[in-house]
Image (cartoon, rainbow, N blue to C red; front, side, top):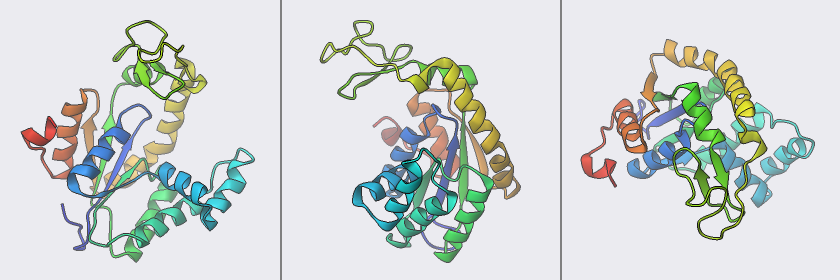
Length: 230
């Protein structure tokens, strides 16, 4: 896919927590040779590097407040400015709201780009709750899922035999709250992109390979058998 204005293409991935957009976005970016852009990654990099935007963001984070949209959008603008205009971009989980989407449109227009496709990954709530609430992690960072990828010994890491940790924000009630917040914030965004005829719905309930093939088809770059199984 080439961009509508002749530059690199721009794809936005939307989806609830646990739907797998991070995994799919990284793979899509790698296979297309595009930049995978997560605002969380941009924020962490800016904080680590101590950039002016990173320092600005830290003011809010240190007091437990959300980083304002204008700071996030400036991070995206700065990142795009440092990229070749011919390189495509996969936005992962951004924008999250209509104001962010409008700001992104302005940033892209300033770079001679526009959003080409928005892919909404969807899965039933109960599937998402099991994916997130089933997560268990070792102190060393190994992640399991008690439903889909359990450890050999219940509650302990296969590699170190350390007790596994169940994060507080991964408990089922908390997960349902997170999903409700996402739906409330993102429903208008789905309408925004739907009205622009950019939205494609992707079934996120299958295994990783099935979802990826559907995503590539939605983007307009069908996956080849060798790529999909690699």
